[in-house]
Image (tube, rainbow, N blue to C red; front, top):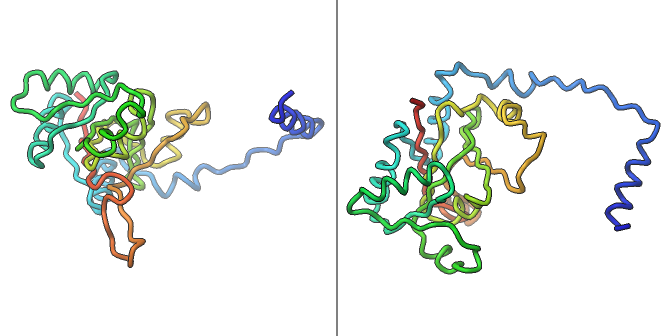
Amino acid sequence: MSARSNILNKLRAGLAGTTPRPDDFDEGLVTRPWQYAPEDRITRLRSLMETVHTEIHQLTTEQWPSKVQELLESRGLKNVLYAPGTDHGKQLAEHWQHAEPRPELLVYDRPIEEWKEELFWQVDASVTGTVGGIAATGSLVLWPDRHEPRLMSLLPPLHIALLKASEVEDNLYGMMQKHNWSAGLPTNLLLVSGPSKTADIEQVLAYGAHGPKELVVLILEDG
C-alpha cells in the first residue's frame, strides 16, 4: 500500500462515528451586492476591462474572423496562433482560405518540446475561446485544455479572446454554479481581467511583463 493510500485511510478512519455539521452558508453574501440586470452585464464588464487597457469590440459570430484579420494587419503582425480542433478555430481557418493578403496561421498541434523556440519568441498573436465572463470584476474565464493549452493565452504579445455575450454572468459564484465547478476543475482555470502588467520595478506600471502586452476581447452577439 502506498504512502498516499495510508494517509487517506487514516483520514477516513478519523471520520468514523462523526456527524457532518449543517451547511449554513449564506450564498447571498457573495451574490447580493453583485447582481445586475441582464442588459447591464456587458456594459459593466466593458467599463472595468477598458479601465485596465483591454480593447473590446462587439460584433456578430459571422464578423469576428474578419475583425481578427483587421487587428493583425493594423499592427503589422505576421502570424497568429490558433487551435484547429475548436469550433472557432475551424471558423477562422475557413475565413483565412478566402482572405488576401493575410498573416500566417500557426497551428498549435505539437508538444511544446518540438517547437519551444518558435512558440516563445516568434508567435505574434493568438486567438482563444473563453467559457464566459464575470460582470462584477470585469474578468474573462479561460479553461485551458488539450486544444488550447495555457501557453496560448500566456506567451504571444497579443491575445485575442472570444466571449459570447450570453455567457457573461453576474459574479464568480454564479459562474461556479452554472458550470458545476464542484464536479471537477481543470489543473489551471484562469480569470483574466486585462493585459499583463506589473509595478514591481520602482512602482512604474509596465505592460507585458508576465504575459501578453495587449488583450483584445471580441464580444460575440448571439444570432
